[in-house]
Image (cartoon, rainbow, N blue to C red):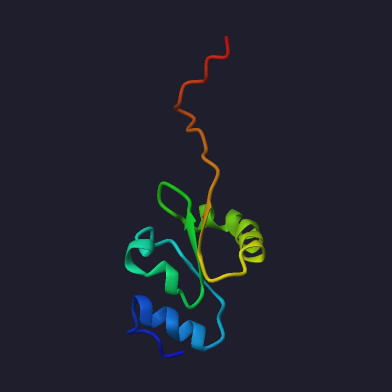
Length: 95
């Protein structure tokens, strides 16, 4: 699409002009980089700590679809992975 040199607001505006309605990112600073009141598209922020690896992000896709269906406006939507307990973490004390 020839958007290689575009950044931030320019990229979002080009996406909107090309007919895109959503932009999916892992950039946690996007809310500090963009005027959320003037978004040209919906931004979906994916969070799958600690590293946002593809294998951790892929299970979020159904939640992304759901979030886009329930938030039709131009807004910022955050989709987070469920936290996983590390095997080295002690078991919780239920007694």
